[in-house]
Image (cartoon, rainbow, N blue to C red; front, side):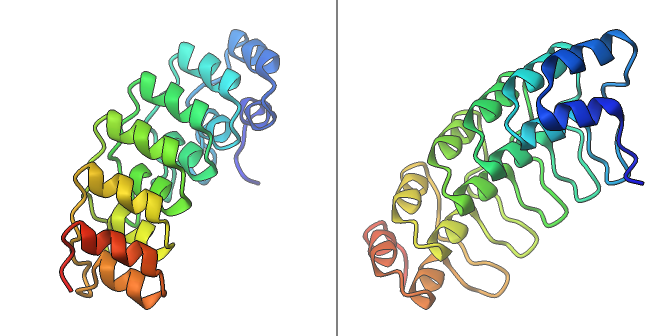
Length: 193
């Protein structure tokens, strides 16, 4: 029904020994389900770092995108699996790939408040001012949530208070949502009223 393989099911549960056995018996490591998911994506999404490591050691493709154009890195980021994100980055996962909405892993991490992952992505060259299809940035996502610490981290690393396609800035989004502390942080860093 979903087009999943035994390898995908083993990856889902983090059964590393089973994954090893399936690979030894010829399982297609990069097979995709009907939604475009791979064993690596599934293991990464569920934070099964040992399984991810084994799949990477056996040449799983790090940057395959599913039908919504999500990668293993984006999925691990979304769920806050820092160790898995670190492993994917060590294996040269591309940090600035965009999903179907133009969202990057950095935007996901900023929106979800995953500070350590934001730091890892930035250390690996993520474009801090990348914009999605609606021209939202990581800074706007963080401001929307009132995550002042995240806003400050992004500003300290070169984020600019750019306008989205509607002309809205991070400062405006913070004001709209009543996040006065976040607003003050943006103003202190030169955001224009």
